[in-house]
Length: 115
Image: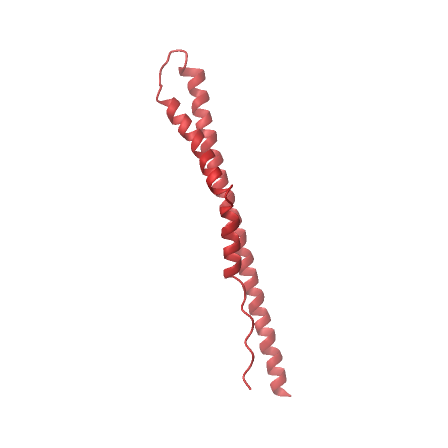
């Protein structure tokens, strides 16, 4: 009878440990989601900076044809995020990383006790 009680405690301990692993896996997925959002925000901020440089040049320096270096810099800053967004997010890189992480975090089945 005492052995059965110990087994129940051991199974309960395994359940608690499995619960902790599931919580950690959920935390990792949340971090992965936040990292993808941070990348998206950085890409968007770079594009906005490029647009701002072009607008600033058009309003202030274009009539006098001065500071022409601002045009290619603004175009590069504006175009790079578009290419990065297409290559990363349209290909589903964040989703693939999330699915790989989920496979790695799966809890293995409990081992059968020896008799």
